[in-house]
Image 1 (cartoon, rainbow, N blue to C red):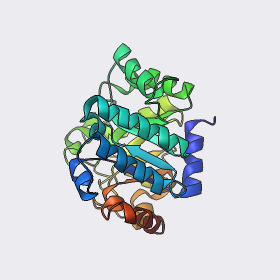
Image 2 (image 1 turned 90 degrees about the horizontal axis):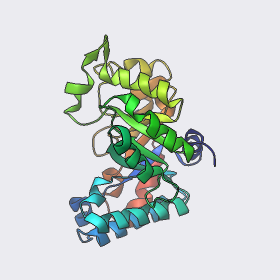
Image 3 (image 1 turned 45 degrees about the vertical axis):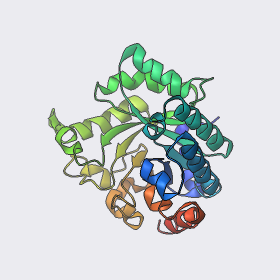
Image 4 (image 1 turned 45 degrees about the horizontal axis):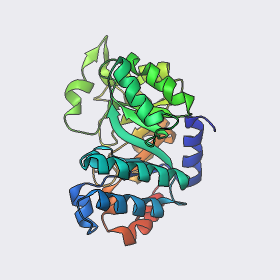
Length: 268
């Protein structure tokens, strides 16, 4: 199997930069007239996979929306991951794990273990216990041709207080990008919200020079960023973008999902 960054590039080249989120929140399930249960989340996820197959190359299940159903939720997530892989989709597990030592290796074995039913292609991680704490996790991922996306400049309003703080004359966000490039050697991307002011986060330079690593960019669609503005937002790094969308695609229900995906792709 090719390394993660190669497979990611191939998926974007073949299908587009759009990554569809699988976020079975109570409101999403209600919108699709599904029960707020693990069974509802299963139906929701499988329908998204069915519509995404042969249209998109990447899905991103939000782990928290499955965890809320306990063990049944995890069984559902395992099935969603398995079905997505069988459909040829790259799976980015949005779990935002971040710890140190043996605890982090426990997470790594859960999401990248050879025999783990949760095994995914990539995992979102938090480096706020120190980016170096993720080095072993990345090695674990690379053993199975997987990758990581580390939080850098996230799309939530509270992000600025921490991520714009200065360390050694650079913002936390800028330091995270530097660490991802040094540690990851191309297999660790960063999460940068499409709705954020990149200059305010001290990372405006990525619009002028290629960042050289993948960017998972939430914020497109319902959160306000427009796909047709992707190149303007990210400039020289725009070809590195994985544009994460969920509600904008799913809002009209399962029957319209394929059409909504096709319309979104036409904007790129």
